Image 1: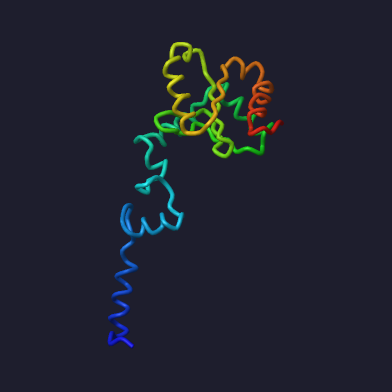
Image 2 (image 1 turned 45 degrees about the vertical axis):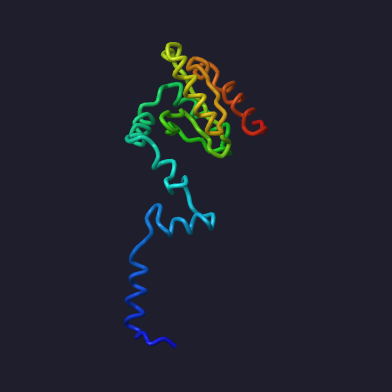
Length: 163
């Protein structure tokens, strides 16, 4: 038996419960050892590592989708209901038009302005692939003229599954 009174035990217990561990403190390290910590070594998730304003910019891009993006979004949801695609996903400094995290597949729909930004698009593709994703690029006119053909190509790249 200890000589501590129930009141002193409660006050020391309350002190332990009142302070939650911050990123980098002991509690975060214990969680990491148990394999339950999300994020990088500092405890930061990918969303926390995004550049400032990335989430609001992604929302703006979703609100102002091009006709080709709208058409492909509808076609993907109707023809491929299994894989979950998200629109305008921030990936580092870039925004993927469509991304399936489970399939590790990114789809880019490029308009005419992309003919002038070949180096930027190549850097974007390299970054996305370095994150472990595959990248498919389609021209706007291909999506608008033949959405079923584009969806068929996407279906062939879904981890070996066909539509």
